[in-house]
View 1: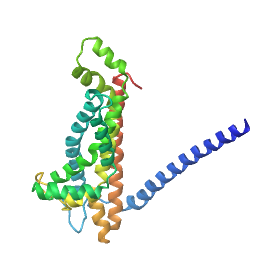
View 2 (view 1 turned 45 degrees about the horizontal axis):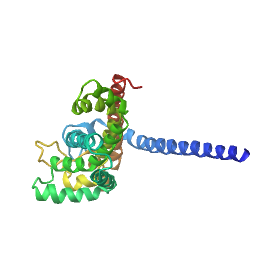
View 3 (view 1 turned 90 degrees about the vertical axis):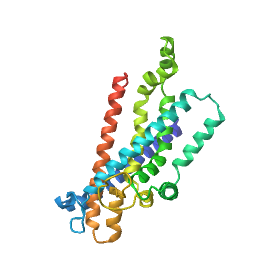
Length: 278
């Protein structure tokens, strides 16, 4: 009995210690960025055009939003439709499904530099898109597709079978059941995958250096080269002349990620409440 209590106490200590260490590291990183970046934020950083005098991040900020939106437009529908097939239409125990899942999990762990080299060889050179917003977005969509697909699949599998059976019992077909009953119930889980995808898009640097380029201007078309906030921050830090401005850019990037994640969580919560979930 005493040994069991000691093990329970040890387990509680490890849980509390792990929680404290995680929160401490998170607050440490965020606090360091804020302390180094906030004093260097100035109106010049938000001027419309970039030059060596103001080192404006505004073009990179707009490019980040454009890159994120375009990548999600490509990846989210493909990921959700693939997940619907795997969870709702494919026969359970199908060998093809197992291969797809293993492949998706493998692709999710590949370093981003590999995606960048692939994007450069395929989109930039083979398809002759050049270093452009479109080439970067298509490369990033391939990067986040496995995460969105696997997360959406798990969210669909987690929907109780009673939902499907009730819909079938009322005379609805499989397609109507999937899009009217199952998918709305799985939105919170799907949004979790989308949030992970957004985080990877916003923070990506290596792949975009090979596919989108690093020109600090707002593109006039999808085929223009561009620079996102993460690439902008990398460029400023690597030059060694604008380190303070790179910290300020990191603060803006952090705020954008928090705002996007908060908005996504709000949307997921609203869908959960709408479908009778807390």
